[in-house]
Length: 271
Length: 314
Picture (cartoon, rainbow over the protein chains, first blue to last red):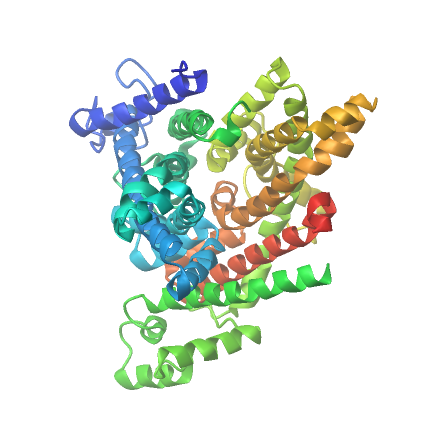
């Protein structure tokens, strides 16, 4: 067993801290993140409010923690949804072939021809900007990529001897698929899921920043940054801390993703 | 070569058709039809029916799609519900603004990032490699809209070197236009360099391990010549593809940067239309950006043989 790399340790620590903060915020935050306190408007960071307060006197630290809950939750649900849907589609199209495969993949590839965020914006204009709308839009936008990756893995696995052996033993197609093909797709899926977690978190923040995210007053890192623009000349901390949170979360995920790829993808080993 | 171009063009057509179908169906998924959206809640049944007939909404969906595609091909993208302007003119106008920023930004990012990635790979695990890769990973993790906000805070508000918000077109005043463009372009350059450095480095590392590089060195070629002639040429392919993808993705994702610097680009147009439920404009923006995205990837593929000698022979 190799020692975990510096990337892995650093990445896991950062991601652990963010997820931990999100979990803690489900039961406890220093202040109520929605409580207005007009006597403490735009207070700079101090012993009372560690990261200061916003234009309504709401505690920034509490809001950042609650925002972590929202972002992590949206990212996990979105990644799970598109991994499940994409894997099912990828297995079916990769294994069945024929006309169903061709037509499904033609649509899949055409959807890949949209930049992910554009498709998500289009879908959001239909489903509406709220938590489940975002999960649906981003989930649908990223599914075609998962389908492509899984289908590719299935196509190369199908030619392997152990799959043929399973068939020769008299196992049914569906048994072979679930028992032998699927477990061998797990490694690329883990690498993909980690990157996707980062993309979704970034996309969710960007949508919130544009005003198309979880509606206020619920805090998200993106809408906190958007609101900070009005007060940025008086209260720079409002524009700094939420961005720092997004960047740290993405840095942690990227480092973790690099470490996972080094370990799971033999092509990249030693690079 | 001509065969290659024709095959690639042929492959793009079904993709574009399905892209158009998706955009078309997206708007049909919305509860309530375009006619009631255009006329509002107070419209009478007869005026609704008249507009439906005029727009062809009383016909079956496949027929509507064919009519719609026909209009698109003639350059008629419909009219904005909010302002009544023709959609195509509006979209192209805003697109020019965004494209200027994106193209300059990605070009400068490539000019910086590709040599940096090559040098990092050449001196793998040295201090300079660690510095480049570390910086790239950090830059990659900073969302462009926050990077823009930080630049604005530092150079616009604290140091007051650059104008804070706004946009001047090149035709009005080239000098002022450049001044206003510095911060948005710098945001893109910093952010996109991160992605490109890592890709350039990873593909250069794969080539550096190959026998012909050792051979070229053994022949007595200088390191500079080895890097330029052998490593660069054979490793630039994946980075070139990525540059295309980055360009296309930015055209869709530029809305956040445009929001930070209040630039009237296509990203902002799309987002504002989503707020205003101005569906013809939403459709026009999506179709146009997706079309440009496919086109960029097509052009990237067509130029690929110029960079990769292996593809040129095939």
